[in-house]
Length: 362
Image 1 (cartoon, helix red, strand yellow):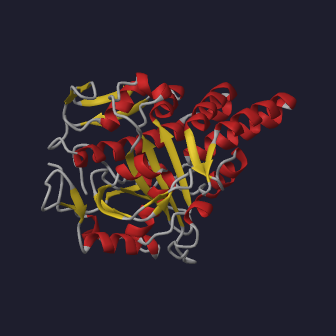
Image 2 (spheres, one colour):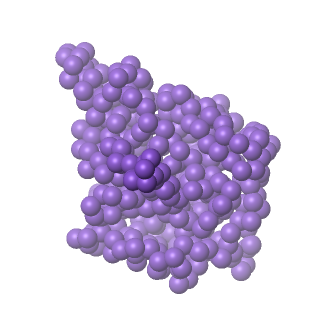
């Protein structure tokens, strides 16, 4: 899906003076910068470093996906790269209650991205799943051991609220046929804190956005958004397109690239204090699968992403069509959705036809 006013999936490299091409800057993914810088800080700090490490390590919550999902999962293909399910959760509890996110009980997966890192780790693809997509929720086991039966035509973002993160992973695997290698979740308060910790994120919009529901009021042009403004930016929808969730996805994709690029630009190696603040904020807000739920595991994974540049990340919305029964909901559009997931599953190039969505959100 293309959002010409807000989203630039790719950025071209500028030519160097004299007609040549500039040598590419060393590519460093944001997670690698934060976590590897943290390792340097901790090694230099000795005993104090161990105390800091223990505290940060204890911040991270883990979900044992293998135990929760069992063997009923898609096969992991040898050439399928790495696939992460990234969720932004909209719980209104705890620190999130004061962020102007509404008065809704429970929690939902307000933002969902399947991030595919191809074999060779050169360019990532992020596929957004609209939260209003009607899906078949498979039978799931909740964290308390109780069972949730299979049900058709449920809203995608309701799965998290009813059955928890493991069931969201299972739902995505069933609808896509793609095995998720890892799961990462960040909540509202953590998102706001991360943006404030790095000093804001610059975004450029071609048209003004004014949304009373989210409180966002921006003129056309470039703005450096603080944490609260960034949260409003990724949640706004009434000021974009037809006011549906589909218009909001373009803003979320634009902000994702801007956030990763901004962290990449900062010299965190030269600022241990800032590095620790970012690491503390991020780890406090993270829930991951149990295989990633430690600083060393996150650092190892981030190191493997060394060749991925956020500026080249391709952002795609799952192709959807308006539901024939309820026009306020969408369903996966075929054959586009099947073609998209097949390309991700086989680690092949995504065809242009699979990036076009019949429902555009205006």
